[in-house]
Image 1 (cartoon, rainbow, N blue to C red):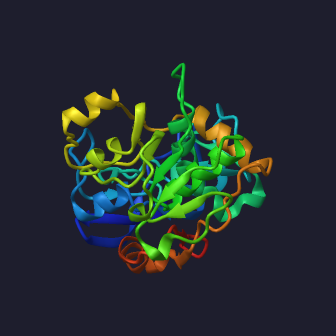
Image 2: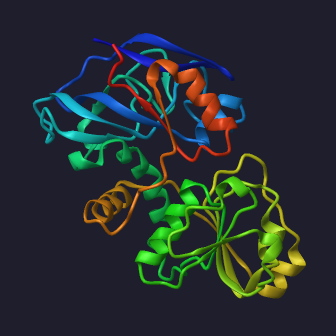
Image 3: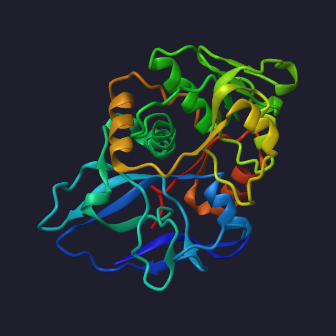
Length: 315
């Protein structure tokens, strides 16, 4: 069994390749992918070669962890059935080609426990569930006391989802900072402003999704005493801050970890019951055959919030 997949052969060198897939066992499902999203965070780092080293890192690799498709084969021990639409957070079924994260492929073999059934009506919007789960995890971790954001830094997809979740949870609408004029529009019941126009210095909880490793001093200077900065982006460079301002405010700094399956199930329910809207977040689409153009657009066009690859015509 073979599939057509996006293969990053080395930084900034991408190709569509036909790959032999690992045969499924009784605990696996085979999913024919309809849509996959391109992450402008972690996948940009894989594309540029700036992803920090961790176990399994290396080239060539198949990227992607935001995929939606239909089950075409279900092993004897699986709970999913042929024909179900599922969300797939990546796969490792490409032999010697690494799956980091392995979702940008026309077909995948994946353990049944990793996929989640989603409503057929979601279609391409299902690719957004990973970012929604990331946002949910940041505000709903198992800590005793979570303060919802009253300031969010960055109005990309993750920032928008954080803001929407804050509003639907019944908290006061947050302020969102965004300097890029192409990304100011699209707010739903919250305010987006340039930080230069915001003089407030008593934020209780600032959630940063910018990925800017140099931003801590700025954010700490905007905290109320005892306030918290939540690092919800992905940072490639060391983060540092001046101690005296943090000391004077008794600032707290928290890193939000990777989402877990309960987070995914929670946002799936929010979306499927109509409480959380995913509208207006997918701005660009390309046939998978134009993958290289799609990746360059996703990483270089600041009007692109989320690029989706359409695999339905792939061999």
